[in-house]
Amino acid sequence: MDEASIQTQPMTPTSTMSGSISIQNKKRTRVSWTEEHYIVIKEAGGSRRRCSHCTRTWSITTSTGTIAKHLSDKHSISSNNISKSSNPSASMQPSIDTSRLLMTRTEEKKFDCSVAKYFVREMLPHIHVQSMGFVEFMREVLPSYELKSPCTIKRTILKMYVVVRQLIISYLAIEYCRFSITFDGWSNRVLTSFYPVTLHWVSPESAKPMSMLLDFLHVFPCEEVGKSSGLALFRSLKSFGLGSRLLCTISNSGSDTIVTSKELGKLLYETYNHNILPSSHTLRCIVHTFQLGVKAALENISASTYKLRNLIDFIRSSKVKTAVFKKFARTMYEHGERDPPCINCPTRWKSTLEMYKDALKVKNILLCTIQIISLEEKCQVMMIGITSLAW
Image 1: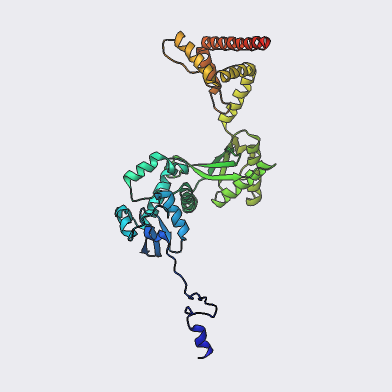
Image 2 (image 1 turned 90 degrees about the horizontal axis):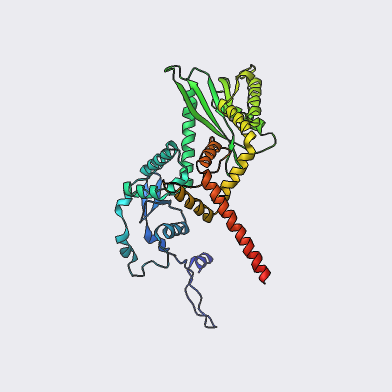
């Protein structure tokens, strides 16, 4: 027997002089329990795996661990509670809903886009897809469709924006007019800065004022945030083809937005070699200017506002104190219970005026509540002093 035939011959169990037995050299085929819970379907792009209990699909190369996690999280099926019968696939067959397997991959993508459009038009956060009411509604209306996660909805919206952005650029290119923009900076709860930019123009065909949300800029915090915002705004306008067609800008009276407008005008002048945005076309919002005047006027009564705000906050900080206020309200008024006045918010208009109006209506209740609470606290202090002396 030659050397080649010796290497290709499979090894069989043979007895050695010591009595041991060699293991047969065959690769053992492992079968996962998840194979009983998915089917293989053929599509135009190739074969995919589809869950037997819903419409979730995976690539043919997806690991069984991913499928097992889906079965455990969505259907409460794991390797510990599967049927131990001789024919497990037959025992699982009654739980398979064949009506859920009618939606194709193309239809599923269309419904994903429809859900994303609904969130955008209604200005809902993408986390709304997990709300109980929306989930129950979709199950009743379209049980064959599986709702996606908030991250998937977010990615779908961003993909749609890439397409819509090109359509907007093509549409604005044929509008023979000049445009104005409004922008304002704000930050979220984790102090991430954003600059929403709104575009305004008058349609040459219908002579109607038009407006649209053009961009949503993210500006990293830095020392010269005004210049950084101006550069980001300039790049955004240039990408939309509006750099040389700008008429004026409108912003609030904040120091950073004033610097942003000046930086934008400087960059436009350096790029297009003529004064597209002169200083006279950089306007300030009249509403924000009026707000600054109101805030300056409120400084004259800041001491009274501070005392009233602390008084209301003192009553609303405890359920017991709020109950005392409501008890006096039921005694003095015939219209039922009254809640303590709301505390003003510096960033919300008319909140200080509403706080003063509500406080004047329940002035007597506030005074009685404070007197009773102060008397109870003094009695508690006296009892503590008497108890300490007795000891």
